[in-house]
Length: 407
Image (cartoon, rainbow, N blue to C red; front, side):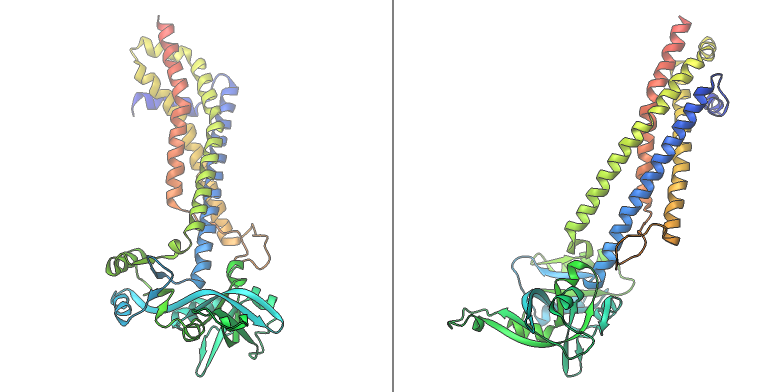
């Protein structure tokens, strides 16, 4: 074993002449441990919220979405559909129309977002877990049904269990009406409410789903569509398939994955996580001041040892390495304890859900946490930097003490 490492290990594990130095070392170690554990837990909580958001949006949104690069509509043609289906990882392609509509039911009315989409097995599978009442099917042989968000159902006093409630949808005509009656400026269609879904407030209070044929008729859309929904094979690589589709379709179309479809939310979560990481890192840096004090006291306490080492021919590099190593032992020990505590708390939360969301009818009951190995690496790098900053001053002080005594 190298001499500087042997001496550093002895300084770290042995009791010092002055007991308060041992106490400072323990406080330093515990400070790093608590800060590290806090970083692991808080960052894992942000990861958990991100994953819950992704899971929630996957119920309503497709794995990939093909949108026009410019304008509101894309022209659907057999050539375009065959191009998308030619990618081996693609399982289903559905056409979709989406726009604002006016809903009427009895004497109540509301502005909503109509999403008319081709019925598919993938859509039914996605929607089933979110259904509160009725069925997730948009078509039943000869009849078409609408799936309505629970917020709209409540505001319009719809009874989705009866299977008899019809709602009327109004959509502006493409051409300006010459009639004095403003009602003539709208297309109006009735559809039966077949089910109610509950996903999240932004969907539940806004969306109505209907078959694509109903949407084309209401909006007089012809071959215009808002986008294409693309479902992939179970084991398909989303990133690779997205890139393949983008290369195949060219710059006239934009292919979006789940994160792209909600880019603002994902960006906000990442920024919040980054700022929290920086804030907790600064707190950890402040807590590591105890390492600086502890090593400074150790340098004074070991003045006689430093004199002997100088007399034996020890150079500045050896002195510096000894105290840098002691600081590393304190920081690494605290970091390992903190990582262990943080990971244990996260696993316990995942398993038993001790901390609840505190929200009625939340998508998940317990606060979600997800441990990301990249976060652990980032925390390790921060601790390395903090160790260098907190140990360098005492190491230089030890060099000066040894030099002054030798002189």
